[in-house]
Image 1 (tube, rainbow, N blue to C red):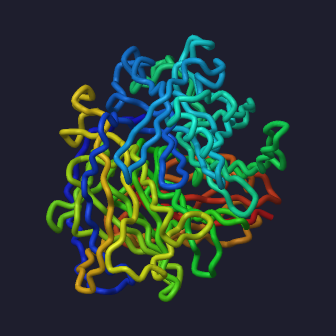
Image 2 (image 1 turned 60 degrees about the horizontal axis):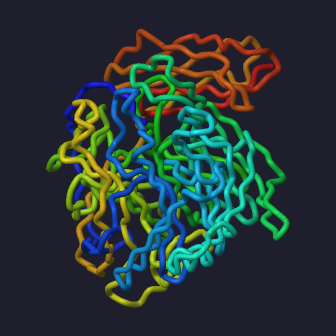
Length: 534
């Protein structure tokens, strides 16, 4: 679901030309794969077993229309289950029409939160028209799918009813988030609850509540039923205010497994994507506001790879939608967040620093948004599916496949009210990595140039002094939030001048408390400080 601001800015930021500064010395090759009768589809969930893919839900049309009566029509819901065997170019379907109504309604939703745990695919939430509610809703359902047996039943045109379990839970009424797992705990990250008809003018045809949370729980899936336990939440109305983003499984420099939230929408103070990532570990979440990722901002096809020898984590993003893209060596900012053909990479180095690269290859068209990357499970990989890149000895490997997603013939069909020109992509792309020691990388400047000094800290009067430097006139917004993630106050600091700035700032918060001050420079650079009020 996309908001609109019309403005295009050319930025004189150049690509730095680098060579062999990471262990990712691979060229990327995309080859279309023909699967007879495979339809265009996007925003779906998938599982896989023994090389076969199970595809659930999603949509068969293009990007949603601007008009509420045309947005997300039920007639374009995917009401079939798909099985694909890419090795043999075979494709099977099975209708969900005869399943119980609560199950049938959720299984045709879009923007699920999903995760495959061993042979079980878990679906949470999703958004679609509900006959029962007679409205578009976010489903309050958790569904468990027996992937191997359901695949076999679909291939053999058998009964499928017994391969699903479903429960209701209002805490799980989320779409546009992502579901992950660390150790035995599931993490439902971000997203929102959206009920009613989409409306770009914010007229009262819907209600929307961002989760602003990481919801943690365990799933109990036994022969006797399905349940969740150990439910807890972590709330941050600023840094976790994310949906429609990429959740990247990670191996952190200390060897710990976790995730990184990559970009996503929308910032609280402006309808633009977040640019900085947020790391998620068992010990908590950690905004990485010292780094901005420019070339991928919405959910897209993506894959994570790790090289243990160099302790480098590589995250690849294929096309999609982005506020920024390069025209030659000039970084262009388009606040309509257009479709792009960029293939980009964000690498985390052994010292924890992050760097973004534009790959020399591009997508074959404006594709990749709302697509999924189905990894080749035959490759060595960690439990969280990060590929063990340096355990692969072949000079050429099939990394996986890009499946579905949106295709647009133009960059900004939504803004131009030409959503009917877009469509669900039916072409599957095999993705190969080919070793090339002479590969040139194009580094994207991503450092946050701003900082603020808050003094005194602790403060005994609720009044502090802010000191900061700006090299140009920028907007400067602020948020004051509590340690439990709730926003206490917000506003705009006016009157900044080029050079060093010093001003008195009063924190409207209770005495004997600790607050988080978040400052936003130029609608894209975040600085957060913890301040103790005594």
